Image (cartoon, rainbow, N blue to C red):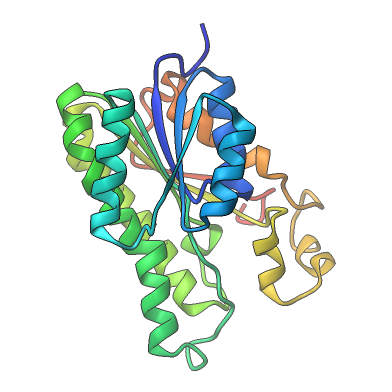
Length: 242
């Protein structure tokens, strides 16, 4: 039996990168996966590549009505939602003084409000089934400071929201955890604005992580192997925060 047999998952930001790899692992583990993304062309291509176990839905994660549509469509297609991975996010390296209100509001909408909307949208159906796993992708910037003021603030918020939701939803057998990646080998890494070798020099393990190393942790948290794990931070950073 596969780890996610008969499970249905929604993964936001699933058109590319980490979200697409998570979807691939979930499908290999037996799940039906709905990937969502604002990039329809890339999302459709990823769904086609992953095959019949994957469906793509266009989705602006900052919009309440889009969340309602995604949940409704997923239930129409599969009859249940077992797993939500709030993976979508944006990263801007801007200091406090460099961050204008438009950048702040966009960061909050995509990185933070989307997590609130997603958890709230799936909670009723998960409570009805008395089971569920919600995995919110934060960052090591949600554990410490970072020279990316809005990003850091939103990732700290995701950490707190995950803990609060875990306590609230725990009596319904719904688990909520946050994942905190360090330097992962994705295009977002180039947004730091410094050479990769300088970033790698900060990592005790001496390298960046591959996206699959984060995706494997997300798969674990989605599965029954993590049946008593809830309300905590899971860090994937090569010992940066040790």
